[in-house]
Length: 550
Image (cartoon, rainbow, N blue to C red):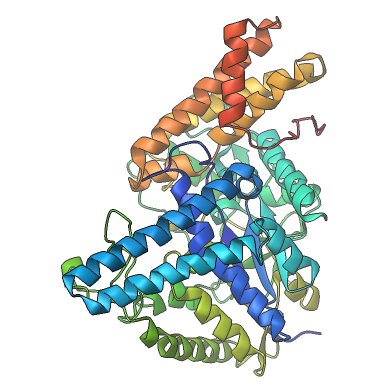
């Protein structure tokens, strides 16, 4: 039945980091997300279930993250990581005891117990299998799990439809392997959408050629719905910050604008699903009003002075002992964190959020607020986020707005209008600038070169060595990860990202040379292949461009 719904959609993604470094860049990213986000959220969902409440939350996992969470190396490394954090807190506790700092000593004891309980939860409730625990929640009807592109490729900038399709198919195949059912919902990486038009590569040479819209490919592959940022629905022409500096990007933006004019309906709101033209595939648009309450550190809840300060840490253990205090306060002026003060603030902020949802839909007989967030925001970036979410879901049980998965909301309220979406993403400026700019063009040149090589192999797949093919496509998938250009652009881990992109490109070329040679490998080559397979062991089964699985 049509009603008023809050559809929370959490997007979970970590690039492939297993055996590719640890700290400051590498496997610790995965361990931090698992400890600070995935396990706390599992706890929230299970607490609610024990109280007879279904969270009715949609959670996406990228296939590359699924693979890492199921890898035995993760389980062993994660246990060691939790022990290390517990030991670091114990060392800090002893240090603060000697220094006579009783407040920080008690806080170190808090963290010591927190990591001890996490390890017990990982081996107990989660059974050492975080992804399996989320599968159990879905099987019991408490959450909905979505899939995404294989390695979180920025689909809107890939040069060939067959590459997009292969990323989607690998995502569907991996999802079914780990969740035992067909995926219905799909998270477009970076909420980046491209309609169909005569597309021309923004780097290098080449003629314009017809391309399908991403919605058309998703629909053809059996998916039921996807998500975009709100400005695409409203038809806003946000150009982004890089167009004047990067001619290839401006050309791409202008061609997309000519092909699909923005919808001339600024009053069109995001509070119901729409059907994308020409495919008719339903989509939800992100509600930026509720989003700002959680995303923004400046104006949203995470910036409250009582909450844990993310950026200030005590080394060598990397423990956090300070609270936000104020947004203007220098890190040196941050005051000690007081966990007992945060429960009241989380309660207050949960009540405010629920009231805001009710006000948003007050004038409507029916509607859905689709709130889209990176999962890692809850717990990792905003330590109190999982507890806030627990309180929000509980408060929604008695009000006019009820929690609903995206799939359930769509079933209750099918699209009543169709929209020709323009091109864009949820990145800075609303277009592709965070991923394609002067600093990252070289990565896209390499991606396009490997795409072309893969297309040339397609007619000969049946006669090529299957082991080499599998590893070639693993390296191709990993090269296509949107994380490398993003990390270069944001300069948050530039050297690491550049090294990873170059490495996967070089490995793909090596494998391509062996495939084209068509001869038996020598001992040194076999050893090198084994090293590739050990380092980049993602996807036991690979979906080929022709749809076969090897």
